[in-house]
View 1: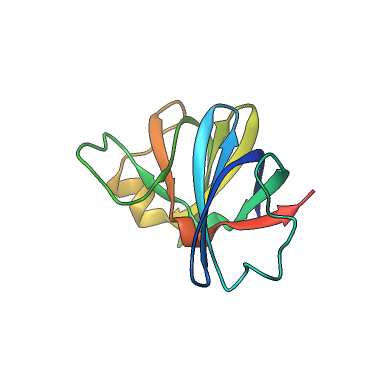
View 2 (view 1 turned 60 degrees about the horizontal axis):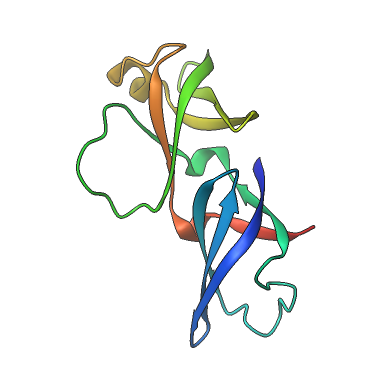
Length: 133
């Protein structure tokens, strides 16, 4: 499980949906929570929280251009690649914290990923969970 620590900067609500902006070492992450308004009273502006997301929820892009709806984008360099027959783990660094993306080995080959390559790591807002510190 990938984990980052940040500070809640903004909370927008509509019905049972919360859109939460969290600052992590100068990068802004967006998290969507559904049906959490009354059960998570610890979600307040200025609170330190952990962001959690599965390795399988991290998409990778190389030479990404144009606009995209994914709001959570992390530019990084590949630190190492552990290739399996079907799945590979691509490790990258975000603010000194090692994170991982689990992608098909076919994708690693198609993108011609190598250690040292600059990539963008993308996570949809609804795939990130928040945890109280």
